[in-house]
Length: 149
Image 1: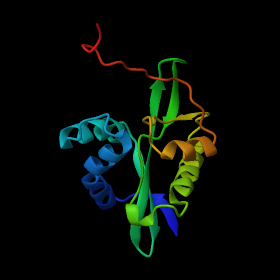
Image 2: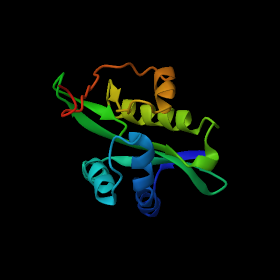
Image 3: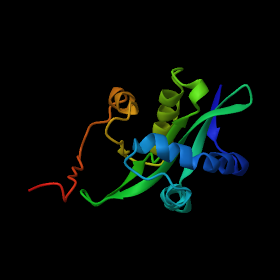
């Protein structure tokens, strides 16, 4: 088992999964379109972000995006994890946790004191994030209009 930065070729293969990642991560809250998936990944990669890959038996089994973002609430640059994905056939093996811990190491080495991520309501990964010490800081609430009297 190895966790390391992805090669250019591996990053391109990861990007081929962006629509599937969008579908699963947003729990039906975002209309899955290739353009939207690309829109969400491009700023992260263009801003110096990168992927760490989990490799076993010479096969990429999962990945995590690692980058930085501006926290408008605190006016600080913080670490960000924009994407975590484990291929379905490799889930429930602790791969996501290993990827997260490796991402934390990279971010600490870069001098970050905090890391953030977003998770949609109903996403089972939220339990993992809580186990890893993430705490809810902001709740985005929404109401559909036009169906009231």
